[in-house]
Length: 561
Image 1: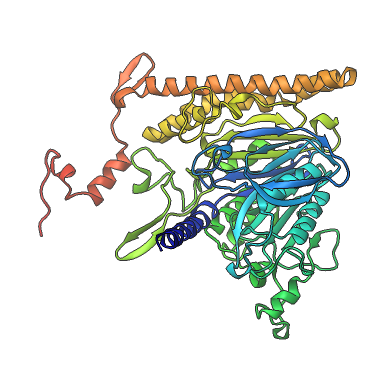
Image 2: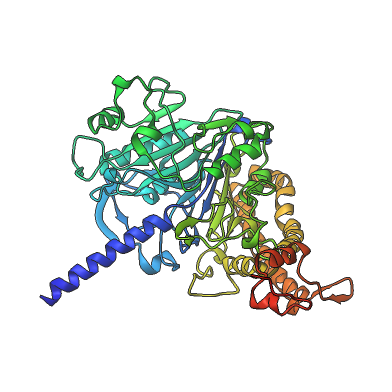
């Protein structure tokens, strides 16, 4: 009896945890897709804010490999959430589920949970789109983490990577919630969206084990996803711009989600997935920044799949979008009581109650609880060793210092891996803890500290972008003479840059501690006792007049009743 009660209790706990992970951890992330015709240097870009919080953040290089025909690969557990621990401490356990291993796999860079860029110049970004719960399935073998890694190890182009994921999910089943991957190569950028087959599907069934659609982003355009499906109408006969699994419309009709007799066109987003939309405003903001002329015409609740960019975009401009807090708009989070006296745009998310109603703070792109930011850059007409490049930084984008890592490197600096630490393991050798400490300390006086931090960051991140052409020119000359020496050059470059960035970030933390010690501001040879900004004093006087704080002000007169 006790054992059955205990088992029931554990099942209930597991269900509660799963709900928590679904509702908090997965409703996060922003991804931007830009094809070569939309960028200043002819690269494709795919970005990813890993916004879930408490996600494993260590990075790895997976080498290329060859396998005997008929080799089977046993899947490991790779959950997106790890309660702040490195993944090997809580997961990576054998599942007893096997898929066919490819005879040849490509080397690639991955986090603990997603593949990001491979040596063929194919890259990925991610965001969760949730979707209909009635499409969820627990019998499938694969989730989005597995699929992203299979795409990287088996896909020589973006199209091939999408077909790899789609075919594997159809055969072995997809057991994750609705997900979106931005998939790029040096020629194209795609949005790939996938959802489960429903609860009854089992491995071996004739029907596909997942429903998925992919749409190509046109040159000169931008697409973005922020926890809601981006793809709308599917052009079934347009093989140049669409790929999809079989049976989508038929399944929607059979379940009463779509009625063709009503005459309205079928929409993947509306009729099939029906994903949640925690903040379409983030997509509106991406589109508005890249084409300001369109901003007044965009309906936040009915956004298109893609919009044209007004001007071609650089990688650094895309990073600045990820650092945005609706700056300068009516939604600017640097302003108001929630920003405190020092204009802090970060908010602690969750449901809040006021006047008997529940509210949520608006989501921004540069969310406080982001674990890391990636920007993958894929090029076509370059040396193969330079085709895939990952720009990476731990922690939220506004504090991020982006580091370049070429997909062809043979190893990553330990600061990304065994020295990375986790939420329970602090280490000054960890670049994650360096950026995290800097980000956390900036909350004391955000606006002035952020301005100081940016000066330091530009000396390093800015220099990495400014020096990129010279570094790659030098690499090409070495590669012409000796391929192995050229790869060592790129490996050493990324490795040493990580060391220099980490030390510079800790120096920046020390500088801010010195400059803003005890609430003073030490600069220009003086220790200044700067008080609250006038705007904050005005808000205190207006909204907090009867508080114990304001009652103690000189010349205070109690308000008459």
